[in-house]
Length: 313
Length: 275
Image (tube, rainbow over all chains, first blue to last red):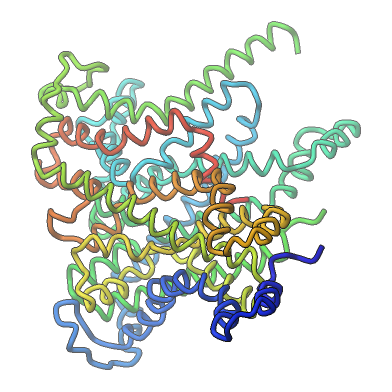
């Protein structure tokens, strides 16, 4: 049977039934009419804003008075890139992203290797590790702020119990960024672990049986078989985690407000601060464009590599 | 390895499993414990592991510190309203992408996938400016409309619709059912598992969302629960942790309870994108 899905088929059938030209035309337009609402929304809330923010980044403007916009060319970018504060913001974002992604993926990889078993207890632990992923970041931020309270927090109480001195956590610029990294890893490690486990389970069993027959030692099976076979999963997680690290905002806003001394100020918070608090639309939109370019590069890379698949079979 | 050695390993593994479980579960338990303590007990060091007396009062204080009924109501309207809109817009789009061949289909589908990859944090500023031109800032519309078309939802539904055998649709067409009717009364019921999956994902995402309502609202009548909860911190000077934790429980525990009963469904909903 021919594919029943083509609009052309339907059109022909109905034309014979004696329909008017308008109806025939509507029939032909049907696929477009069905996607039109979705495309309208995508245009209004994704495509147009992307273009609009690029446009806005060439103007000096503020949310206080949107009628008054002065063309300044690339001045917003040159000023931004010359600013020491913004250098720090970029540095923080980079350090935060690299730490979160690297430590988070490493940790969840080992958790996945360990927890990928069928006994009930492993399923329960998987669910427990996953649970923070579905909780509002605002609650996670406040909960960890309380846990990290330097004087009365649980973490320092536990450190004291085992005879260690209390830690400064969010209160010291030296430890604040890493404290946020810790919270982020705690929230996301369960997601990564489950994705890894799904990846592990998609590796055909007979390859492992063959390796076993060859008396391949476990570390060789791991490095020559498991890791290469997991490379699409690994790549997916690298992209997803990097993009979501660039987006970090809620924990900063609730826990540190970018401080102490700018030590946890990162891109989205910077954009928010410039745009909504300091009414410096130019700097905010220029920083948005920089973030957009970073996310865009990662997305393109993602699609290209996903198209090719990462590993060989 | 001897039998004793094996036994020892098993014990160590169990201890490690419990340890890992506690790292992720105990913070929530600590939220619960703190929420019932008195102020002096909160500021006791080293802390007590269980409340001396159960202070249900903390919940009343948290609840009455702002118009929380309005916040909960707004959260529900936003989460459910978004879901309904995503459903109404997503079903026809997914049906079209799945069952018709037309010029530009792949290009348009690729275009919608871009929306899947661009986080709202990247474009909130221009959307805010748009919203203020339209006079929608500080309304519930500003919280719902930008998420009206979900690329993820369309993607999921398209997969489900593609799996429906051609014969089913052929049979309906022979019965002279209109395309519109086939879509809503035959295809949608067949895609029920995917709709549940997506519904859970979308509801939890918007129930939890803090960033977007923070940007788009500034008056109590349109604020959602996460914003109300975060204001407890500001209102109480960041000090009354028992009241703050009690407030957070209102936000967190409904989700944890649903998660407890529908673990697999929810995990699948959130991990689907990886497959």
